[in-house]
Every structure is written in structure tokens, then in C-alpha cells.
Image (tube, helix red, strand yellow):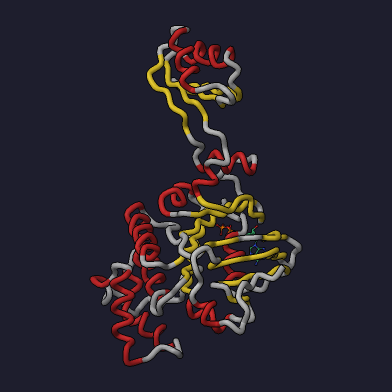
Length: 329
Ligand SMILES: Nc1ncnc2c1ncn2[C@@H]1O[C@H](COP(=O)(O)OP(=O)(O)OP(=O)(O)O)[C@@H](O)[C@H]1O
């Protein structure tokens, strides 16, 4: 199946994708490196327009390789993909100016200020009108919160400021789609917060954002959708809510008498009973939670907390892959 969703005879329509259309779509996208290693294996990815899409996977799971293929920086071994409805690489010159990217950080000059670095980049961008360069640079710096540090030399920038300058460079032109490869990697908590706010702001303005990350918490905090990579394969792709609800909720009982609580749950026929520190959890199956609670109390178990808890993303990941999240592909 071809990934391009819009025919080349309808460029206007393609540049204004409607709700529900794909900002990024891949079909069977595959990369086998020369040594024979398959880094990305038949990827069918759908990133909806308007989403903040978390491309989640442990180190080495194939995220960067996928992003490099998406942007046309390396060629796929097999498969096809489109950006903003236009097939790549055929329509690269039409679509790439509408796509901003932060991949491995752009090459900035350490001795130049933030402004001067952006000036050089803007000047190298042929379609950019030099008369409006100053305004473009000023607004890109403001967008990422670097106005006050605009005259500082790049080498004096913190890692977070460098990442923000990278995003400013991607924002010199209006972008419908931003692809950010691990934008918070190596940042301190404050820098991380700033980048996450920036992503949320950009999304609120209508930009579709794809960000790769190996941090579950990052996806939970900023993303509406998620694609989960594991050893080169996409093991899940959908909204965050749908992924969480793919696992049955668990009943969690907090009590000092975990052995007694586990006995009651076992007698009621609950499955997958797990005892932890002051806590017992289980899958309720057909049992009504209120009946479970009533029986625990009737049995004299001192219950200090009781809830029906949705799975968190880490549990979903473990269920999908059979591995802990910090396992390298
Ligand atoms: N140029 C290359 N030649 C050979 N193998 C490569 C090359 N680039 C990446 N790989 C391998 O492909 C696999 C996927 O790597 P990739 O960088 O895409 O993963 P990733 O999910 O982005 O991880 P990280 O978060 O560590 O960057 C890894 O096993 C990596 O060693």
C-alpha cells in the first residue's frame, strides 16, 4: 500500500489536511543497515494532525533511524511514507519546508551569539525574504524564551538553551509539523520543564508535534498519542487513553495485613494477586469492586485504602513486550 494519501494533482487540499488526517503515515517502513541489522522493521505508523505524538522506546529501539527516514536523511530499505499527506521522497521539496526538525542538534557556531547563529541559518534558507529576517529571528527567539540571552555566545549557553536554540532554528519558518528527536535528553529538571511547556504551547497553536523519547513520564505529561517501539517494531500506536485501557484495571487494597487481604481476594476468585509493601492488588474479573471491599471488611481486614486503578504506561509497556522499560534493544 502506498503511504501518500493525497494525489499530486491536489496540492491545495494536501496543504490543509482536515481533522483525522495523518501528519505522518508510514507503511511497511524498514531499515536494514549494511551489517545486516534490521533497525526498523515494517513500521505502520499513523500520527494524526494536531496531535502531540510520543514516539516512545528504550535506547536502540529504532526511533532515531525512523526519524531520519521520515525526514529523508537516510533511505528506507523497504516501505513508504508521507508527511502532511505528501509522499516522500517524491514530494520532499514541497513538504519539507513545512516541517521543522531537531535531530542531533544543528551545527551552531560556538563563537557566535544565538541571534547571529540564526541569522546565518536564515540567510542560508533561499526562499526566506532577507527583508523580514530580523522579525523572523526575533519571533523565533521569543517563541523559545531566548530573547534575553540572544546576544550571548552559543558556547556560553546551557544545554537547555542550546536545545531551545535548535527549536528556534526549526521555527524560523511557520511549520505545520515539528519532529523532535529526544528534545529533553540531558537537560536538568528546569530545562526539561521549559521544553515541555514549549511543546505544549506549539501544539496549542495548531502545530503537530512528534517527539521521540525514552521517558514514559514525558509521554504521560505532554502527549495525546503514543507509538511504542520495541526492538525495531511498533508494538502499539494510538491515543494515550486507549493504550492505558488496553489493560484491565486492577483492584488495589492498602492494608497492614497483606497476607489476610490476599487470602480473601484468592477466596473470591480474583486473578493475578500481587502483594507489595502495605498493598495487595489483583484483577477483579467478574467480581464487583464494592463486593470485594465488603468481603474484606467482613473478614476483618483493616483496609486503609481501596481503589480500582488503571494501568500506567509502564505496565502497558511491560505487557506489550514482556520486558521492563529500561531494557536496551
Ligand atoms: N548507521 C548505523 N549502522 C548500523 N547500525 C545502526 C546505525 N544506526 C543505528 N544502528 C543500530 O540500529 C538500532 C536502532 O538505533 P536507533 O539509533 O534508531 O535507536 P533509538 O531508539 O533512536 O535509540 P537512542 O535513543 O539510543 O538513540 C541500534 O541497535 C543501533 O545500534
